[in-house]
Length: 274
Length: 285
Image 1 (cartoon, chains in turn yellow, green):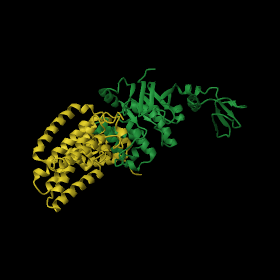
Image 2 (cartoon, one colour):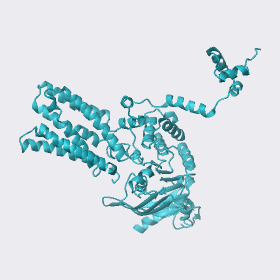
Image 3 (spheres, rainbow over the protein chains, first blue to last red):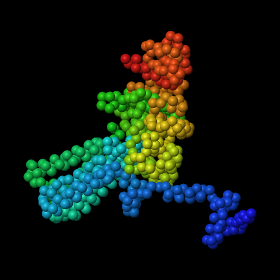
Image 4 (cartoon, rainbow over the protein chains, first blue to last red):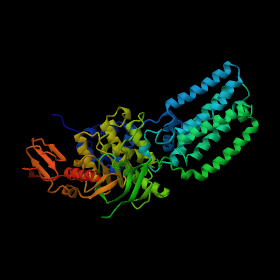
C-alpha cells in the first residue's frame, strides 16, 4: 500500500499567495484536480470564479463575427451597431451578386465599346437606382422575414430603418464608386450618378414616413426613369440629367432632403399602420 | 383586479373586413388565456398590444403606457416580450446569432451581459445544445422554442404569446407549461391558443373571442360553468344534437339539451367554450 501525499498547509498557503515556482504550481494543481479534500482547502472567491468561468464560456461559445462585422469594428463602429448593420436583410449574397453583376456588365461593355455613350448613359441611369432598391428592400413586412419578430422591440421603426439605409447606401455607393473608376472616359462624367443617387436615396427616406419603403422605392425609380426618358424625348438631350449644370440642383436637393429627414426621422412609424 | 393591460373599444379593419369590433378587455398579473375560433380577432388583438399593428380605433394601456404615443410605445417595447403567430427567421443565422441579434434590438448593447442573457434563455427553452445550429436546420418544435426564447430576452414584464404551443410535442408542451406558469408568478402573460387543456393547466383568467369581440371574460371554472347542467353522457348517439362526440369508452358526450336516457356529466372548459360559440353561431343564424 502506498502512502497518499497531500500538499502541506504551508505549501497550499504559498500556492494561493502565488509564491511558488512553476514546477511546484503544476505539482499542487495536478494533486488538487484529483483530490476533493485539498480542493476544499484552497480558498477561492465564488463571484470571481463564476465571472471567470463566464468569460471563458463566452469566448468558447460566442459566434465568430463575419468579415463585415470585424471590418466595421476595426473601423471604430461599436460591436452591437456593426452586428445590426451587417444583418441588414437586403445585404444578402443575392443582392450583392446582382449589384456586382450589373456593375461588372457596365464596366466590361463600356471598355469593350471604348466608351460608347449609350453604354455610359445606361450606367449613369442605372447606378442611382441600385441604392434605392437596396434601401427599399431593407425594411418592411413584405421584404423582411423576421419583421414581426423585431417589430415589437425598442429599436424597431425609424432607428433600425435608418441604420439599415446607411448600411445599404454605403455598400452600394462604395461598389458603384469602384466601378466608376474602371470606366473609360472622363471621371467627371462617369461619376455624375453620385448626386442623383444620394437625392433618390434621401427622397426614399423622406417618403418612408408616409409610404412603405418598397412602394416609395418603386415610385421614385419609375419617376427617375420617366425623367430621363422625358429629357431624351421632349428636350432631345439624353445626358441632360448628368450635365455639370444639373449637379448643383441635385446638391441643393440633397441638402434640403437631409434637413427634412433630420427633422422627420422620429416620425417614421414604418409598417405599423398595415 | 389590478389591471396591467386595459383595452377599450379596440377596433381594427382590413379593407371592409372589421377584424376587431370595439373589443374591451382588462388583464392583470398572472397568465391569461385567449381562446377563440380562427378569424375571431385574437392575433390582431395581440399584434395591437405588441405594438406591431396600429388599431383604427379604441385605446390600449399596457403597464401604464399608451402605445399610441411614440415615446410611450418605445418605453412599452422595452418591457415587452412578443412571440408572433408566424415568426420568421433569418435562416443563415445560428440560434445563438439570432438571439444575440434580437437582444441587440432590445437594447442590450454590452456584449458580456447580452451573451449571458442569450445563454439564460437558451437554457430556459432547452436549446443550449443547439446554440450553434443554423436556424434552417431546426425542426418546427425547435423553431417555436427559439421564438419563445427571443420573447424571453431582457426579462419582460409583459409577455404576449400567440399560439406558443403549436408544433411542440407533449413533453415540450409540459416543459412550456412549467415555464409559463413560473413566469406568470411575477408578470403578466397573455397567450392565445386553440388548446383548452393549456388554458385549464395554466391560466387563472380566460377570455373567449368571437367575431372581433369578447364573448366571455372570467375564470376557467366560470367558462366550464357555462356548460353546467348541459353536458350529458349516453350510450346511443342522439339525433339532432348540435355538439356531440364519441368518447374513448365508446359512449357519447353531448353538450346541449338532455337526450333521452342520458346521464349528467361534469362540464369541462371545452364544453363551456363549445356551448358559448355554438350559442352565438345559432344566435347569428
